[in-house]
Image (cartoon, one colour):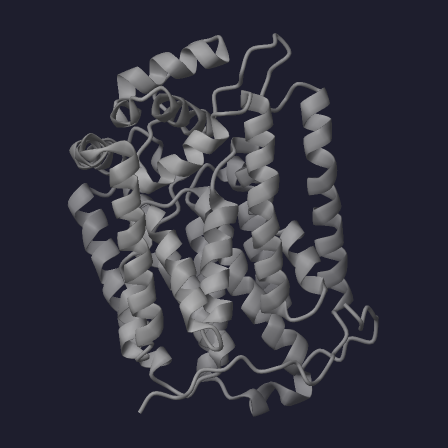
Length: 410
């Protein structure tokens, strides 16, 4: 029998541990100060020579430009895309910033391409940041959620390259927050997440295991409606182009390693980074998928508290996909938010804050390692969730953080 789903309220308003509050405050201030400084110092979007800096957002703007010009199917053509990008930036660059999203995401790209490049870049970062903030506030259950959201280390990376990590995290977080009480809205969030097909494996499995049929059906209906509307707007050729170029994209990044293996944050990438073959990488990846799927089904059918189930699903989503860059690690903030919610309610166990600090270190200083440290950070969060699930609360009751230093109202 599947246990009913509910998010417990925080009845014990424990103070926020001073190390946690102070670390989040410092990181949030750094993030807030970095981008104005980077803009005026010509480190971000445009260089000192006035030329555009080649980075991920250029593929969004160029794909949107093609859609606005009446050639949406060409958005998936690497050579056409690069010509537009070079013209936009005013300089050439090595490699490609390829567009590989399903046609519905062209609506976002086309909207952004109506604006000048810098306006679209900054606007995209700011606007997508807002729902992420709201999701984290709802997850943590008190105003500290705003600070935790702004402090998460991947905020810097995601904003710097103009990626969609904020949107992905807000949809995953919104889906999980709304599932207990607003299943239709939860399903809408999940349906909108279909712009990231690599996340489509675990969510349906968990919803079926937990008998969350309203969420399941709503998500399917929303995804189908988005596909139909994009077909009407961008034509059959856009879907043909998507499916034509997808195997080439997979070949380039998962077989040939055109992006250095250290840039991807999956177990597949870790195996390849360490010199393993593609076959060995897939063997480890499929073993990970099987283990995560099994654990999630058992957890979601159990009577474990909902916050742990939600944190596990957000974390498992990252572990299950082989194609995962650092900006996608914004989803890990959702899992951390649920863990912090539990810690503020029950008290943090002695090892939890040091473990979260190590996770943050691995994400912040990824450029120093050039290795899949994000994968290790995800494993740390997964381990904290597992310990909460497997070890009874009573065992740690005496050592729960008393936190005499206080920010009790946040």
